[in-house]
Image 1 (tube, helix red, strand yellow):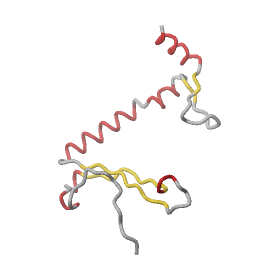
Image 2: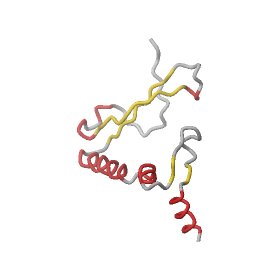
Image 3: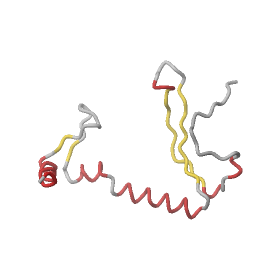
Image 4: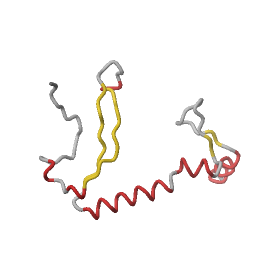
Length: 108
């Protein structure tokens, strides 16, 4: 049996009993290798939200949903401002003609 080591920097509660179960929500999980080394054992990241009240959690969840509607990656593709190519990589959007018009207007 391995020993649990918490590598998160916090903030923390002393005991999960301190959390209101109605104001707590698991968001997603992801795998990650220690220091990016694939020869090491994979770790599991657990993403969650915890608030003092259910109302605060609901407000945060609503804000995230609204933000998804205004995601620049989705809007930019729909408006044909740029293209993301898997050959080039997601970190380098390729500007389309409509995107260049906007860029020039901003520069001017």
